[in-house]
Length: 61
Length: 271
Image (cartoon, rainbow over all chains, first blue to last red; front, side, top):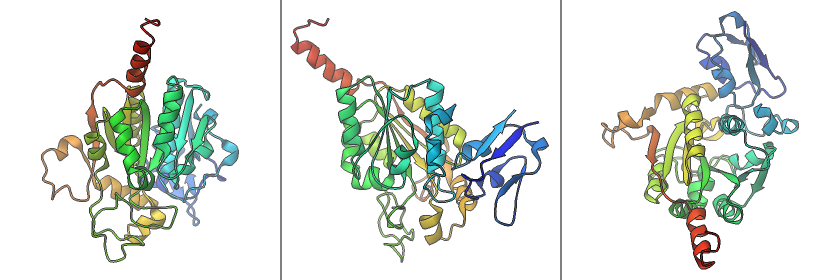
């Protein structure tokens, strides 16, 4: 299973990672913070990492 | 690791939530990392504007110049030391509006560098005034009733000025963006990549385009490949972002041509 890490200090909660994940791995909390709640669905395309404007998302594994 | 080229101590980035600049910076650093460039054999030059802050976040050599003048500084750097890999980062305000004259002449001279112009369709840093790329009818702080001018098709301008590599991508299609930057690095000569990018804070808000994901979707919905656009009329292409490679040809670059003159005046002593 992939490990998706979000650097909460760098993340600005823009929502791009969650909106465009092809497998809907992320939910957002009431503040808009992305949460990788379904990592088992992650296919490792890394689009969330590449589209993160803040270097805040890392996909490993 | 791309983070070897990133000044992590300076993060979080200065840019607004959902600004595309960080996506472009990441794509550049990813390509730099793949090439195995060292921090010492690269120079990243910038001008002024939001994107002009990019050099603050890199551990490579960098040069932060004056507004619109990143390319003249880059030309000087390349002329003094042609072995350096020069990346020139400009916004639309910096690159084609304030610095439009420098852009066409650097393209005409065919200075061997990678020029990446992030186009967010307005002057972001100063509060969202219209720039040379703001589309007709768009609302900005200085066109509150709709812009009466046409925006530049920057790729056409740079192509007409003589650049041997010209391409346009978007921050939505990061895979294509990666490939375009990679090709620009490989291409000898003036290699120009325009990147369409959202400014949710100003352009997005003024034109009621919504938040960052909605602006990304707006870019996606209005993007058309060069191949598909070839069969469309100019009316149909109004407000669309045509992406792909528009020019890709071999042409002797400025430093090589200049070196030939130096060698010939030395009476062939280096031959």
